[in-house]
Image (cartoon, rainbow over all chains, first blue to last red; front, side):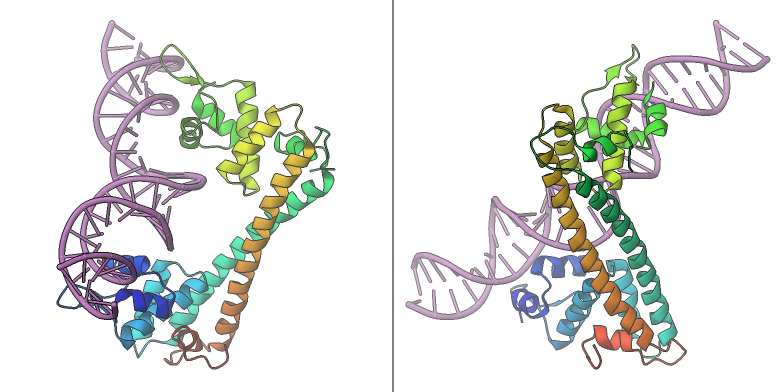
Length: 133
Length: 133
DNA sequence: GCTTGACCTTCCCATGGTGGGAAGCTCCAT
DNA sequence: ATGGAGCTTCCCACCATGGGAAGGTCAAGC
């Protein structure tokens, strides 16, 4: 299986597959006589593992840890759970951050009549003429 | 006012102030005889405007637009509102993205007993042995 | 005056995750 | 044999931010 097919099958772009290999997230892929990277079922499973982890927002560094735990048959699930909980806390922080941005901005937007007149509570708030915010 | 004081007063790091100037987000600052950047009240107001906009998650490109509108006394508030609404929609998308990550991960975490045993629904799900997810 | 330390200048490099594209090689079907 | 699709490596870009080196400047204290 060439890299293009592995990319299609895994949902990870060929560019990224090469990148993951280069940073040691994936082992060096086998090569054909011509130097083409070759991928098998096992590689595909790793790629899918990575893609699913990315889908959950894990960083490549966290995924490195997850992959290690995955490959260690004797890992205590405690360690996996700890890693996941840590990321969950990170997601929570992000969520709150964005939520408060959204709330503040939504308020400003609702205050702005949005017509042809120049006066605008959004700009007023950003410039520090804090009347209602 | 030197850049360090402007940084303290605005909450924008000196590094970033220089950067914003270099990309044309801020006009070239005046210089002292020794070449030190000098900042006045007007510059400070711009810096605060930028910081508040960043706090709401606007990109530097969006802020460029906001600054232009701010400086245009005749702008229709309609344009400001449109820009803000666009960013609001972006925040909404981000929010949903993170929320669904959080939800999925929280489910997995709740399924993992997290003890010394090696079996772990989190890793199972990431590796594609989709039982409950 | 001279030293010292805090501040400023410019310049380059790094992060994280991804993409674009060039130059050159390989494979396969026609 | 030719053409096009796919592969290789290599460099550059994004966004926003920070780190740090090498060198100039300023003000306070001796």
